Amino acid sequence: MNLTGLTIDAARSAVQERKTTTLALAEAHYVRIQNEDGQIGAYLTLCKERALEQADRIDRMAAEGKPLPLLGGVPVGIKDVMSTRGVRTTAGSKILGNYIPPYDCTAVARMEAAGAVVLGKTNCDEFAMGSSNENSAFHPVHNPRDLTRVPGGSSGGSAAAVAADMAVVALGSDTGGSIRQPASFCGVVGLMPTYGRVSRYGLIAFASSLDHIGPLAKTVKDVAIVLHAIAGRDPMDSTSADLPVPDYTTDLEKSVRGLRLGVAKEYFGEGLDDEVHHAVESAIDELKSLGCEVVPVSLPHTPYAIPTYYLIATAEASSNLARYDGVRYSYRASGVKTLSEMYRRSRDEGFGAEVKRRIMLGTYALSAGYYDAYYLKAQKVRTLLTRDFEEAFRKVDAIVTPTSPTAAFRLGEKSNDPLAMYLADIYTVTADLAGIPGISIPCGETQGKLPIGLQILGKHFDEATILRLAHAYERAA
Amino acid sequence: MKVTEKDVAYVADLANLELSGGERTGMVRDLNSILDYIDRLNELDTSNVEPMAQVSDRYGVDDSKQGSERFAYANREDVPQGLRTSLSQESALANAPDADGTFFRVPKVIER
Image (cartoon, rainbow over all chains, first blue to last red; front, side, top):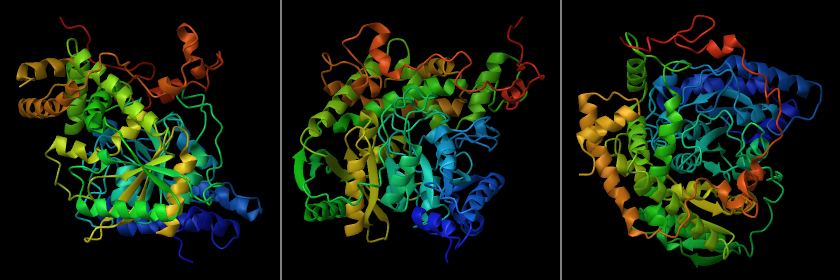
């Protein structure tokens, strides 16, 4: 049997039924990485020793005939912003180029407890700041569907690894669209759960009121399985919600007939590519033919989402990234004479251009005299944006939009224009600001064979409904 | 122009960044272009809108309570020994660019 390109269930049952071994699955993926990743660049670090140890554990369970856990034997990639004990974790930054965490991120630990085999750490924009993966301090990632194009970002390595069969599933993080937009660009499924659904303990912080961890996979069912494995209260993260975790796979097959789908004109305006527009309209028609009722809704503050996001995210980042001081674990510049010079030069040499730009913008927005005009203003508009969704969700069960205004753009196309790059997140930042869950699923291709993504947004903690809709669409399409 | 080269120098100072000459010029340009775009927030009247710090405020806070009790949803039991074993001194120092086995070592703090 072909050992790459499997779904979670196919991989786990093949191991359970002794048709193959976890070891063979892992080895097959490492071979694929060796052959393909030179031109894609999805991985930053491989952790073979850790993977083989886990594979051995799962294979022994299978040999003893014990039932394998949810992700038993499944090879996975982990975005390099999640701490892995004993395995280098860089956040795509030179400033953490040699950092070996002494503990595991909760989401990673839960993946492994569920039987997953961590193959390695995937490439990303530095500190998850970017929409193209070109801000990685190590190397860019090339879109497996067209190597001249970006995979999206910041979880570009995770999306590319899944798209190129170099992992069955991967974990990513989403602060402004960083799971959904690369999923859309690479033609895979990406889920950002509700804020608080998945613990962020051990996630290298970018903007704490916006950071989410979530899965990328080939199928909706696979993201549902991973969410089930990683969700739930964690005493190590006070923002993780103490709410029961449903089995997200049980209702997947339930009919979507009668569900009300909101369509907001604000997501179909200027800047939306015609081919993307057309593909998303067709997807909405498909959902209608499955029995969904389409209801126009209004999200009037949408045009203010990007400025709001870039003030809040950068303000929080400027504070979170103050910890990189060259003392405890980060890069230190050499030949420095005083403590203050050491801080400045270490940060100057350790951070890349986009990270410095965001630290500067965030520090400016928080500085005396500007706090009210920028940061406080943005927090108030965040309330308005959230109310838009609360209002809309009184009338509908989910909202459908394009994930990104365009398909994958070319490497270098936007890298000299920060504002143009920020606008790539125009349809995704709103869900991060409001803390609602969102999923991106493939909905066709452009004439140039580039994947297009459909985004489905749901109510707080109602991942089950958007997964069900996504699954129904995936099966029908 | 909202942000001048002088502002950039001041903010870089606050952020503990050095920024070379060329970087400062680019930063003035980029920050002005982004802040111009951000200005559209002023089209909105937010005088009667409460600021929102994070999402949990929307579904977790109990406004009928006073003080920190409002945030009871985020409480946990106090565990004297901590939620996990503390890092050993060795592992806490393992990633330090410079340490002497007991302490982190840094360049001189006081200049004379």
